[in-house]
Image 1 (cartoon, rainbow, N blue to C red):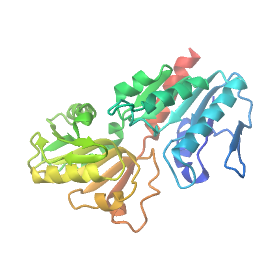
Image 2 (cartoon, rainbow, N blue to C red; image 1 turned 90 degrees about the vertical axis):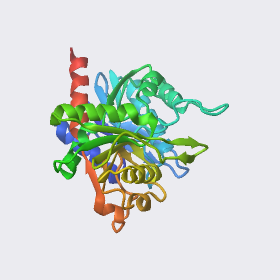
Image 3 (cartoon, helix red, strand yellow; image 1 turned 60 degrees about the vertical axis):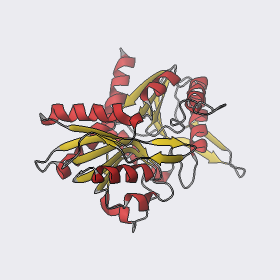
Length: 321
């Protein structure tokens, strides 16, 4: 087994923790930049016959865009395959372009499918990712093997902040996330051996504009609500949903999302008093949240490293049979 981390030094925390959890060192590679912005990546160990895992989260950062990271991953995977790697697995905690998975306007692209075709074209055999925007669309876009990790087990750490003998509910901020929230509710009911409430908020979006988020379907009166989404971008959806839940009688709201992008005015939006805590995973470092931001005091990071390590061990065991 060989594991490579294509992240910059500032973003290597996840890969370092994953390597430590697996008891495997990160293999060295060369990433040579040219003055015009091109890059050359090559492994510095022989990949011939190896089962290779390349770790690269595809969020945009201060020094590389999602496009840069995607292209580097593709070129590196192609080099690995050309030099004899038996299997290449892309470990992608955050998968860019997964939100555009269907046509909603005339001549719309289905970008997720195009990304899948690029992965397959360079010989990537399987993809391991966390909380895709739409699981069915993700699985249908790829013809290679996909391993999807649900984020909600990592969020169980939020329960001690809510479980004060009062009712608990899981809510989705929009109808598209209902299945994701229902799965967590069912998991919590089994774990806690008591009923867990459920709610969803009406949301309509067109051309990037949200037109409605006031109607709450489900009883949340007196409940501590776990508001679950796949990602937080500007934070506006979470703020609107949290306000609607509080207006409907929720005693507190914890905003939970697999991927914390925190773009634009997200820190201000999530500092809203309707949100008591913000819980995200380590798929994206919270580098956009300033140390003195009001969001820092309520932000918690849940580790998904054990879940990724378990998925890789299962992939390895299946490959070695």
